[in-house]
Image 1: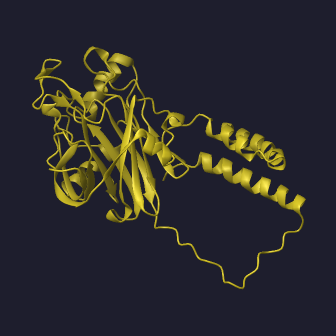
Image 2: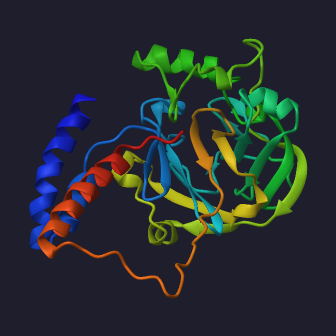
Image 3: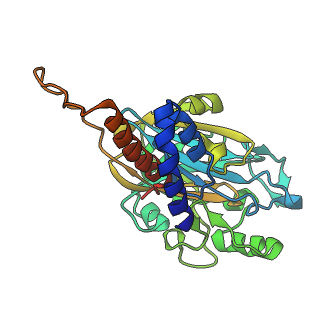
Length: 320
């Protein structure tokens, strides 16, 4: 909190002369380069980064590391960005990986889940109330085609992907090798939202059943960047970035948790967010007149104070 206060105090005085000089963009560049933590809202993108140490594969490889996920909602689409070391089609392993059999010789991404209004992922799955997106064509999902599905119940495929049973078994390995606890995006590894009934529980990570309700458009890194995604500024360190978008009307408004779990559960990430109703733009009456401005100089000083405060507040805003 001290750091934010000092930045705000400094920025409040920096932005005033910047506006007077016509160089406001410099002030925003300064804000944008400031370090951040998981769960950040910036330019309508909600970012949750994930650390690089908590994914340990055979030979301590980082191939299964997730860098993070981000979600943007605008008046037309829900946009999702995914960053990780795995390409979208996963890793070809051959019949075995680390001495464990891999049924389809590939370990990749699970499906992407949205949960609106539930307090626990497993409970939402058991009640078939999840929304899920199959975006990786060759994963072990029961969904037959790429797209978004409703009334989803999830299942676990860790047993056929040389995987950890659940977050606890993954944590035990990470803790033993690094001395650190893993995280699940903006969640702690043992957050109640991801709790489950027993240590022998196989954690669900792909669609088991559901109804397809719409299609998705796959997006590459350039297309996401054109839509305002800036993962590298928010700690996303994976070598592959891709994503998708779908019609915003396919999912309800309200608070959500977005979850992505690898098929092997070597890494997983979660993100809290809120999907608000579309903004309603009301045109002013035709005969209305703009409010009088009491002098250019006063206007610039007022603008500098208001915009400076909003800019710093916007950069520091957390996703609910």
